[in-house]
Image 1 (tube, one colour):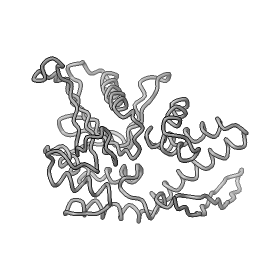
Image 2: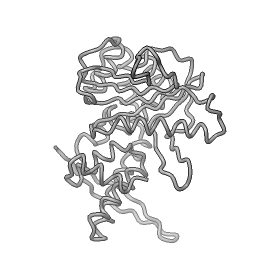
Image 3: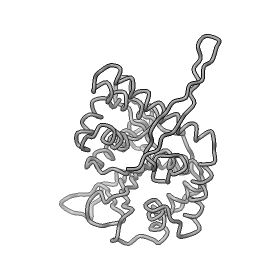
Length: 297
């Protein structure tokens, strides 16, 4: 993995005086701002803040028509109570019918994605109930994972899961929730060319139609936004600061805890955190997942 040294400016305030320090950090080349692709969590979330592109992507992925979409929050954090575990959703939105869509980019296969979708769907429902909705008013919901790998090893572009009767597959539970996994490396299944083009663009950054060309232009536009560049680099800087705090404590556990806290703080998904902790500390994905679980709030 090629890496590059980057120098960042950090301004500290001491009373009424200010001091600017230069911090040196080493970043893998694919994580450099100018090299980010739509498969990066941060970049994907920013692209999906464009209503036209977000709506267009959902319509193509799900083969549906949406009149308009609404963003309840830039990054939805569902926290049922102060003592419960919260969940941070990268892309959370509603359409004109109240249907809820949670879309996540996944670049690491840690084998627990099915239970993550169950958890996310449950938290979305609890969030609705917490706001006073009756069970009959629970929204239709889609939990969508766009994976840069085949989560189930069957070569399909798309895997859709809805609850049905095991004894009679014609009997659907119709509980209003669906979990969908897309595989950017798929070869099997009947999906539209529009959907394939989106998945291929996420996989290799090559635009093959007008819509993916718009996505590519949006990625470039985001890279030209200095405010978002500072935001992204600040996240990387905070990550390094937490790492240093762990070293100062002289405890490997402190390093891991600091890294996990930072990743959560800046909005990385659970899976992206597992991947980063594995890379940082040389863990297997299973070891990393166990370590992250200990400190994930």
